[in-house]
Image 1 (cartoon, rainbow, N blue to C red):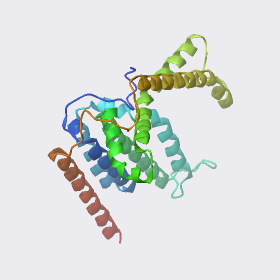
Image 2 (image 1 turned 180 degrees about the vertical axis):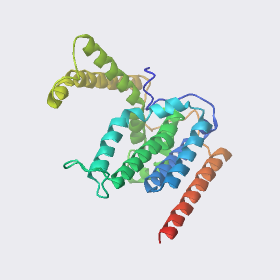
Image 3 (image 1 turned 45 degrees about the horizontal axis):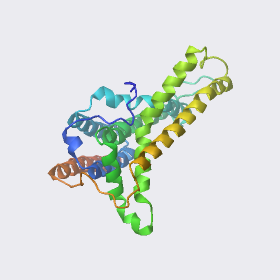
Length: 272
């Protein structure tokens, strides 16, 4: 496995976060993401960053591995940040013809970068790094169980979501191998106009799709060979149970959310 690819990987361990019930981690992660989206001041971001740092420390996952989960979307962050800097209305920092970055645009760009990074690090990354695909599937399925009464294929949806997350690093590794193979044959992906560069990636996309379909077919055959029949009659080696550790996790996030609400109210009161 390419060590530069961390998104979608499970980091084995027996830390406090590893032992938390997957349902708890899913609920806390989604709630944390919602709180991050509501943040709007440096103090609020600092509080949420401190919570994420504590979660990383409690998980035992190397900080370098967690930070690498942000690496694949850095170009997106830079592009979106540039749009905010140059197109947001406000007080211009300087003006050069039609180019006029604003202070308000810089603030928006920083907040957007912080939101995306905290969502990945404190939300999805910590949940994926510390939860095996099987436990993640069971957790999603148990949370969506009430939808079974509406004839929603809950088990199949949970399985597809988990397999998709698990195959992210595999497909990224496969794409890296194809790029290196094409480069060894003289392919250059950094020359020419934008359209030419886009065309140069066709020899990468086609083999990648072929590899993805081949892996999907192999996985389907392996599941059929093991008599997989979905949720019908399926038993679990490990039944999910809430413990005191889950109560501690909810309490820790509840304390963070309460402090966040106090900061929000204080900012609204002082602003009024």
